[in-house]
Image 1: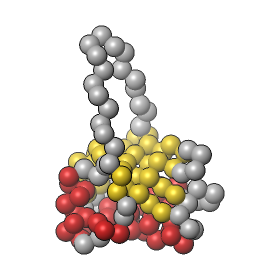
Image 2: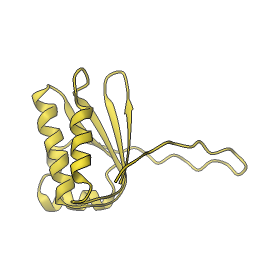
Image 3: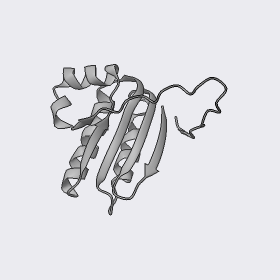
Length: 123
C-alpha cells in the first residue's frame, strides 16, 4: 500500500494505492485520523488505485468517518475502485459515505513529457 497526502485550503486528500489488508490497515487508519486534525475536518480519500480491500480497510474508513463527524466535517470517497465498491456493498456500509467520481486523465499525446507524482512509500 502506498499513501500520498495533499493538504488543500479547505480539505485534505489522501490517495491510497495498492492492496489494503490487515497487514497495512493500522497504518491507513493512523494516517486517515491524523489527516483529520483541525482545522481541516474534511477528507477526500482517493481509492481509484486500490486493487484489494478487506474488512480491516473498511474499518479504517469508518473510524475516519466517525472522527470527521465529531469534528463537524466529513469523509468523501473519490472514485472507489470496483474492489472497494464490492467490499463496501458486502458490508452494507457503502451508503454511509458520499462518493465523488472523477474521470481518469486522458493519456498524454505521443512525445509529451509525463508528469511524475510522488507517493509516500509505506508498509
